[in-house]
Length: 293
Image (cartoon, rainbow, N blue to C red; front, side, top):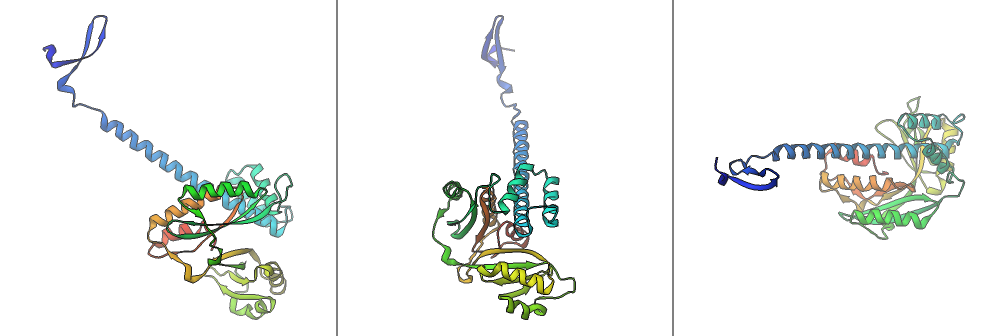
């Protein structure tokens, strides 16, 4: 074959090494692209798994902290705390993180330094108001970290607290005798409840003034023999401020925002004035599990 059909590409001691011009269209691009796509899929799956693990650890940490706060820091005398610690260990939760969560439930750091409460208010796309409840030993550090996360998701700090109502919520486990909210209404109102309802899974939920949450929970537990599941202070969005989610993509992006917030150690709860809109039930249920409602 004539050397005209070759293109000189390099020299060696014995001459040149050529490349056939007829072969220039032969390429392994598809194979490389396939490998690239496979690696992209692996990275995507790994990122998804990591996000799920982070979310699980955040929930476990909060459960440990709540159990320690509500029922005491000694797992020997606190079955709920013992169960939460056992579940955390099975999930590979580090011992140091468990100790931090127990201390946080007692209102201190692992080193015994008092924690302070703070609220951070913001707006994120698409014009969703957000209240972030934090507990920290350094308000400045927490503000800087949370503000950076908000900015990364194209949001900004903004005074939107007036769009929410602060309320106490007490949740009791399904009653063994089958009692519902109607059956305990009188006692609940007398104890200081403002509203009461029974959820689809049988829980009895009582709403009250934030300052009376602990006393109402104690009184109803004692007088009615109800088993307390949790008591908490919520920032519930006013009905006339709700923003309907336009798509599954929107709630996915908001969910990623919440996941990033939950990575910050001081963040306790996230509240939003977002409504389901046209989003399908599965996507909405997944998103709802990440925020306080």
